[in-house]
Length: 183
Image (cartoon, rainbow, N blue to C red):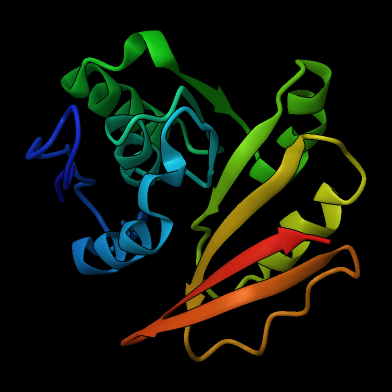
């Protein structure tokens, strides 16, 4: 697992020693960022269900202004922190421990506004839908915020709240990526 391009290009990230975390495959990540292009430059990014920090650090490397990482696992957040330090991104990144769905309220209280939200939760737990439903109650999305959600291709179709729309869906083997916007 490595940073593909930008400030930290080629940096090999620390990876988990077990399979409790499933990092986004490099080829899927590269395809997603090819779709996003330069829109990530100067963006405010939330990497929910951060795992290793792979997606958020790719954003930072490509020019995002700052990244907030959220994960409920202390082990995962330790891994994220080590990867932030390895990329020398400490000034522009911070970690929050806790359930990503429940942290939305905290992020709003702290004045968090995001241009991009990356969701890469454990598969088959309907966490993308739960996150989106909770997100409707708070104002942490900038106008034109794009939510990039990863889930298993064999999951039921994603039902999004009325205030969201799926703009694009891409399949990469056993992985689906949904590009979701607020209406």
